[in-house]
Length: 196
Image (tube, rainbow, N blue to C red; front, side):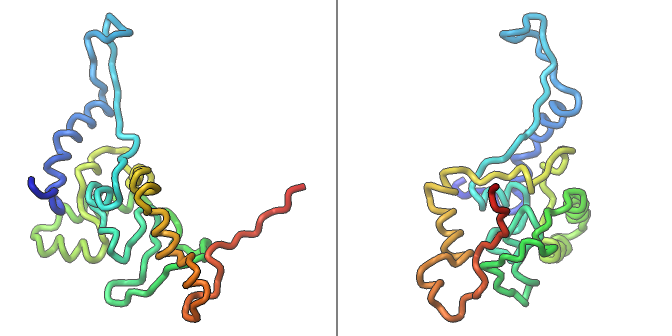
C-alpha cells in the first residue's frame, strides 16, 4: 500500500496462489482427514470465475484497460486501430467477424511471447500491438479470461454500470434519439420467429 499494484506487479501476488492451484488441479492434494471422510480424501480445485470490478478484472488478466480501444475482453470488437480510433458505439452488426470470441490458444501464445520480450521497451511495444501482457494465471491450463472474468453485481447493477452502458455506449437516451448525428440504425434488431 497505500496504492494498488500497478501493471505487472499483480503477478507477484498471484504467483504463490497459482503455484498452489496448479498442484490442486494437476495432482490434487491429499487431506489425511476431513469431516465427511475420516480416512482422508484427495481434493482438487480450480478457479471457476474471477469476480471483480472491470478495472480489477483487466489488471488481473493483464488485458488492456477498459479505456483502450480494445474495450471487450470476450470478443475482438474494438474501436479501430491506435491513432485511427473509430467510434463504434451503437453497433448492431452482430454477424460481423469482430464479435467472434477470442481464440484462447492465440491469447495464451501472445501472452507467452510478451513474457519472452527481453526489455521493457519491447514489452511496451508488444503490449501496444496486442493489448495483453503475461499473467501468472496463464500457467493454469484451463484459464480463459473471456469466460472466467465476471463483473460483480454491485458494480454491474447497483453502481450503474449497466445504466452507463445503455446510456453512453448504446446511446439509448432521449437526447440521442432526437440528435441528428446519431446512427439511424436501431440499437437492437432481431428477426423474432412468430409464436404458433
